[in-house]
Structure formats: structure tokens, C-alpha cells
Picture 1 (cartoon, rainbow, N blue to C red):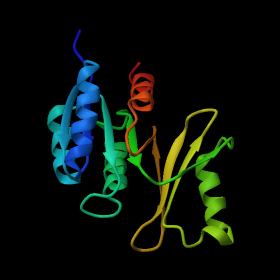
Picture 2 (tube, helix red, strand yellow; picture 1 turned 45 degrees about the vertical axis):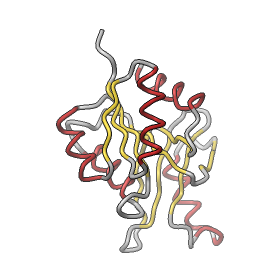
Picture 3 (spheres, rainbow, N blue to C red; picture 1 turned 30 degrees about the vertical axis):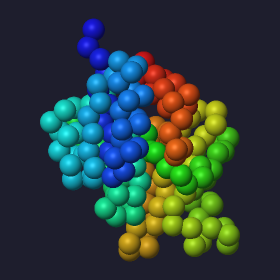
Length: 164
């Protein structure tokens, strides 16, 4: 049996080392990159089974941009994407997280929020809604979020669930 391959993209070498140690100890093959450009090259050459992306690297939204690139790629659109973040995730029971993001954006309290991370607690559907440089709202569906600092007790079950 071949081990599952996981791509970790983060500009913090300490975070990469921690995640790589956790995953390698569980039998996963880990491929790493320090930014979106290197990450995309590794995505194409290594063909991972799952990607874990940091948000802020070279730019504030680089992880989101790479997630969008993966999801829009015919070759990789079925590769699960986990976003690691220290940003709070809004949890909801609303089935349509896209609609929730749009409704939340319309409210007075959230007009100045650049990034919304949303997750349905029942279905696990998740996504990122962020304001691009042109001021337009961009929604990217992802498979979940991993809080920083990384907790192996949360990381490993999330990965196992997505790779079964």
C-alpha cells in the first residue's frame, strides 16, 4: 500500500517542520513549499492527495489564491484543501455557506472585514469569502480549516476524514 501524499505550503519553516513531523509519524508522505509559486510547481510534479495551505505568505491572500487555482484546475479540482489560519471561523447551520457569506457581507458590522472563513457545522462544507484588491467579494470553497498553532489531535482526524 502506498502512503498518501500531502502538500504543505507555508512560509514559516517551523510550522512546516511541525506538520511534517506529525504527518510523517503517521505514515504520510509530505511534500513542502514556501510560497504559492513553489507550491503550484510541487502540486504539478508531485500530484498530492491533499493540500494544506497557509493564508499569508508572500501576499496577504496567497493561500486563498492557491486554493482557488487548485479548485479551478481540471487536474486537481478533486484534491481536498485545508486552510491553516489563526483567523476565527464563523460556524453556521445554514446549508449554503456562500449565501451566508453574502448576507454577512451586507450587514453593517462586516463591511470592513476583508476575510470571512465559514464552515457549516452539520455538513462540514466550508469556504473563504475575501475582498480582492479590486474590492470585489471572492468565494472559494475549501474542505476545512486547521487552527494555528497546529494541534495534531485536530489535524490528523481532519486529514483522515478527507482521505478515506
